[in-house]
Each structure stands twice: as structure tokens, then as C-alpha cells.
Image 1 (cartoon, rainbow, N blue to C red):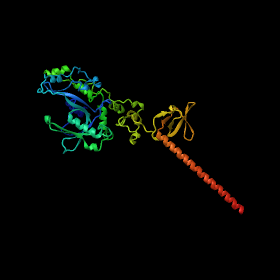
Image 2: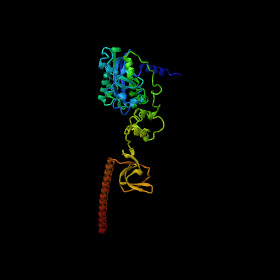
Image 3: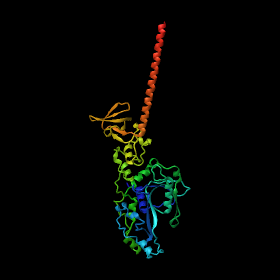
Image 4: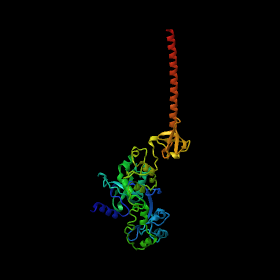
Length: 425
């Protein structure tokens, strides 16, 4: 049977086009991180012209000095238009050929963000309604940019999965009287939201939608909306362009294959390429896999996905039995004279013989180990702790020896007294 809800949502998405608009009322939303690791910002600045052509279209400015995204490396994958040669609108305004009274605007700066709307209410007199988590792409003005950046100023990084701060947008009015008020949502400034534990549905949506080449890849969106010089000149001359259907239907929707668990997490977290360092268990990974590994957290320590997750996140594993050693090696990698942790005991590498590796503990006892046996490089803290333990043990031995001496002395004196008593008798 047909999934009617899914069909209706798809219709709404097609009505919206590429850019989402806030509904009237209050909307609390999560700001998504950038799609690519090399991106320095969670947004992209884009200069556009308004009022172009018979339908007063918005047109991406072709001045690459202010729109450097048009010549960035990632956009080359998606750009099918020749955007070289300068912007005919800017040239026309500068020369006077395009009148300032024509309705065509100079380049206006906008900011493109990806967000996930979380809660909405049409009035502050009504209760909040939870929204289905879905990544939306926004092209916002200075008010939106400034309000979101207030969040970054307050929280340093509002996009953190473990300490997310939502932004609150209040929209009033319609059409030309529309007004926005944007600021960090104080409830989440006071108490940031751990999305991994409290909103795994948002994490799952990010894994699904926030991928290089997806519908919400900002480079792809800009390439899709850019016109070449000839098309812009045609619009300025009164010629309307044919409306394109989804020009990359079947290629741009999900160029990354559908993936589950850790693979999908890799796609959202820039495909770090570290996930193969440790074999992953079979089955479905938890929502936090490869997102927020904290090996010192009790929940992470008990998770069967800890090792591959730590490898992907670049987190250092804590070896519980050794009290938190350093790099994990095989016994065959040991350097003679260096100190290591072997099964939780601090030892010194003594060399190899007959296919085995030998170590020596603090008491001078030799320990034989298989070349593939795991050892851990010892940290200074562990060495100091072992030395303190040795000193303490030596002190205990000295104290025992002194006690033994006193006991022997007392026993000797007791014998002499006994002899004297017996002699007198």
C-alpha cells in the first residue's frame, strides 16, 4: 500500500524548493555542522541579486571576488554552467545601463545554513509541538546570521552533539511585513542538549541527509541555482528561461549509497578513514557510533563498539587493567631496556630467545611472553607509581628486617635469662 504520509511530505518538500522558510510563530532549531571537514564555517556566504527579469527572480551574482564559492574546489563536481566572465548585472549597474529604479538590486549578502527544526508553536500562548527531525537548508539575512552567531558566542559551538544549543526564531507578519527575531534559546544555553542520548532521531537524520553531494550540500545547492552569463543577460533582456525540473534527479539525491551504522556516521563526519583500524562487531551500531567517543565514560567503556569507535573518533583508549597506559603494541615490538605494562605489571624488556620475548619485573623475575602478546607503553605516571610502590615495599622489607632483628635480640636475651635461672636452681 502507498505510504500517504510520505507522499504528502514529499509534496511539501517540492513546494518549498531548495530553501526552507520559517513558519509564523516560534521555531526552535538545531544548527547543523558543515558537510565537509575542511569547511571553516557552518554556513556559506552568498551574494545574490533580486528583481531580475519579468518574474523578479533571485540570481546568484557572478562576481567571483565576492562569491568565491563559485570557484571553490568542491563546487566543480556539481557546476554545469560556465560562471566565468564576470557579472553582467554588476557591470550594468556600474555603467548605468541598469537603473537603480528598475527593481534590480546590487549584490546582497545572504548566509546559507543547514538546520533541523525541533519545536514549533504558532503563539507563545500555546504549548510547544515537537517537529519531525528533518534537515532544512536556509538562505537567511543578517538578522538570522547575527542571531545564530550570538549562539556561537555564548556556547563556542552550538553544533556539538553532546552539548547542543538550540536557536529560537520568532516570525511575525507576512510578505513585505515579515519580521524575524533570532537568538539562542535560553533553556538550552542553561542546560545544553545531549543529542546522542536525548535525540538520537536527530543524529539519525544527520547521518542520512548531511552528506557530501546530498540535497543539503551547500556547494551543490549553489551550483544548482547558478545561471551563466548568457542566461542572466537573457533575463535582463526580458526573455524568461524555461523552468528546470530536478536537473540531477537520480544522481544528486543520494550519491552516497544508503549505509547503516558506522558507515553512515563516517559520511556525516567527513569520512575520516580511521574506522578500519579496529574490526567492528556485527549488527546495528548505536546512534553515537563514530560521533562522540569518550573512553573514560562508563557507558562507552561497556559498549562492544568501543574500539572501532575510538579509532574513528581519534580517541585514546584507556586500558583498564593497566590503569591507563599508552600505545598498545605486540611483545615483539618491545625495545630492550624499555619499560612496558605486561598484563598490568610494569616490566622491563630483556630481549628475545628461541622465538619468545622475555621481560623482567621489579623483583628480577624473568617473564616469558609470546611475540604476539599485547603490551602497553608505560607512562611516566605509571613508572613513578611503580617506583613509589617499590620504595614502599623496600621500606616495608627494611621495617620487617628491623623487627626481625629486635625479635631475635629479645629471644637471645630471654635465653640468657633462662640459663641464669636454671643455673641458680
